[in-house]
Structures are given as structure tokens and as C-alpha cells.
Length: 470
Image 1 (tube, rainbow, N blue to C red):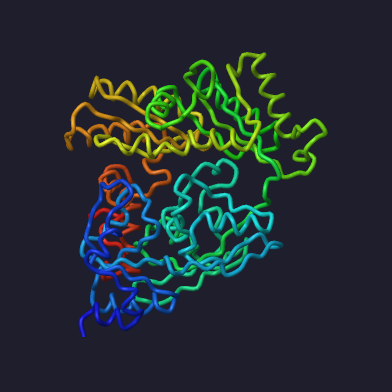
Image 2: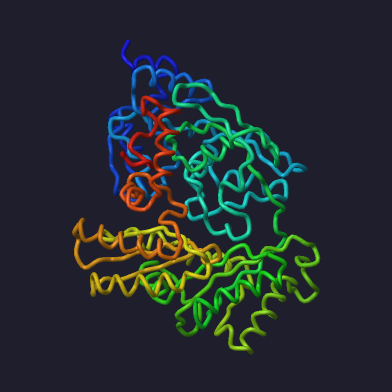
């Protein structure tokens, strides 16, 4: 019996896609990575996942897990591989409001978990533009970040437990609901961010948080990026650490947004160089109850703080959202970053993180070096400023692979000089393998290879990703 026939016998013909039916899975959101999988398997439960992984392991067949396929680094490239989609494993098994946790399968779409938590007056705080298609297995495998990291942390901080099918088909039960567990190596954290190279996540226990009763959202113009950091610290003190998002959009980002998004509006009456989207979430009733005049205390308080800062010259301009429609408009401006950036054919995109007080230094230093390397190149930045994560993109004057690589190396070099990371939240995949070779500590790479070899001696789990060859 050949492999595909055997796999079909395990999960049913309707759940084994080949040829043209499999082709759409082999194309990522950017269109940069296009492959033809041998087949796409859609198991219904952990037992079926274990069975198909065991069969592939015995045959030495490469496996590539796929979730919402919204990655940007080629992590789901699958030429000739068996792709395993857990889209059918989309059950929210349990929500425990008193324990503030949800037990979910890996195919649960992020928005579905948002809605389920909301029904219990709770929130699953991980959010980003692709939340309508990204799945829990994918966000765990890439350690996704998003806009609310400044308050809640990245995916690692939101996970209590995992269920993982290992490369030999065995199921590793790490479905802990504990906040403290010192029983040996933290295998859960080893699997998070591994991009499916060490195993296939099938279920998870995720943390929930109290749902903010009200949000105060504003666009704020600061005199400079250092002033914006001061603003963040002032707002954190003023709100007791309730700042949920602090997003930076420079003037050229606003220009590009207006040009490319139909119906987009200016954030202010006049243009500013440093534009910040800030959002504060209030959980205390006293901060969220609608007053007799229709005002909401947390919104009024944010207005009061910003007005004081404007009098002192620490803020140049501010617009506070007065309705949910205004809030959504502000968020759309930020969340449309991918559409206005990554749809340009010739670009060098990066996803770096530096210490929060080094963001301004990074931008000044990298701008100088890029202009020396390619005087006509354009730059575009959008940043999760509250945690030092920058999505910095260069549009070079020529479409030349060697030239693009030189630009990427300059970004990596400046990042390293400032003690930063060349990969903050988008993963390594294929795109950043050269960056790993150039920048990752050699001993760390040796340890990563040893772990990969120990868990996946046949090298079948998402081969060629994350860990570069020696």
C-alpha cells in the first residue's frame, strides 16, 4: 500500500486533498512562497493526527503543519510535503470563567476564541490584523505578538498548557492548567515558537483576562519618539498600567495609507511626524460607567491627561475617540499596515525588536546607512512602540537579490549593535535562515540542532525551517 492510500484509509478520502485541491494551501498570503504539496491532510482529532504522523514517519515523508497560512516568513512552504491542516479540529472544549482559562483545539480561529471569551465577560487579549483567519496552533507555533503585548505579553505569556504530536507520532500531554510547575524542563515553551519543527500542536490551555468595561482610544502627536516614550510612561503611571496598545505611525506611513486605502482619513487637521495610537482598557466599574452627561470616566480622564501634556508641550495634538466607529477607524489605520506595505513587489521587510528606549536610535542609524547604500530607497515604518518592535521596510531602487540582502544585513547589524533581535514576532521560516546563520550565537545554534536531532532524527517535521544547516 502506497503512503497516500494508507493516509486516506486513516482519515477518509474527503480529507485528503491532492493536485489542484491541495495547491491553494501551498500559497502564502504574500504570494512570495508558492509550492505544490504532495497532499493536504485534514484530520478530525488528535488520534488521527497521531496516526498520520506515525505513517509519515515510517515512510520518511516530510510534514508541514499549516494553520491560517497568514505567515510572512515562508514557514509553511511545502513543496512535495504532506501538509497537515487542523482546520477541522476547531472545538473550544471548555471555558472556565473562574479560572480564567480556555481549553481549545489548534484549529480554533482567533476571532472565535475572542467571541467565546466575550460571552463570559472575559477577553483573550492576543489580537492582530489576521485574527479572522489565524488559528491557535499557528499563533503558538510562531509565538505571535500583536498590538496588546505591552499589557498582556506575547503568546508565550498567554499559554498554560499544550498537547503536541511528536515527530514519531507519540502524543505528549502538557495540558496543564497550572500557573506554577517546576517539574523539570519547560517543554511547553520549547514547542511554542518552534514553527512546527519539533512537533505538531493539537490543543492548548490559554489564559483569559477580565474584559475591559470600557476603552479610551486616541490618536496622539508627539514632538519626537523619545517624547512618545515619556508619554507612554506617564500614561502607564496615570492609569495603573492599563495601556493596552501604543502604536507608532510616522508621517510617511500616514501618507501611504491615505494614498492606498479608499476612504482613509487624516488623523489630525495638520500633519505630524510622530503619530501614536494609544488605547487604555478600564476594568473597574468606576472608570467605565456612563455618566449623566453621556461621558465615560476613563475617556474623560485620558482627555484630561492629554490636555495637561499639551499645555506642557509634551503632546502636539490629540484626538480622542468619541464613538465605537471612531475607535474602529483609528484601529483600521494601524491594522491595514500589511495591505499598504507588503503588496509592493520590490521590498525588504523586517520585524526587529530593540530596547524601547533605542527605537529612535535604531531609526536614525538605519536611515543613514540605507541612504549611503541606496540613496534613492524609500523607508516605511510601523511599530508596536510599547514593546520596541518595529516593522521596518525598505523599498530599494532596484530589484536585485544581492542588493536586497545587503540592505537586510544593514538592518541586522544596527539591530545587533543596539542589543536587539532580528525576529520579534513573525518567525524564522525560510526568509530569516541567513539571518540566523549570521547573527545567532553559534553555541545556541548547536543546541538547537541537537534538540531538533533528538526529537526529529529523520528530519521530517517542517524540514529546512528555523534552524540553518551547519
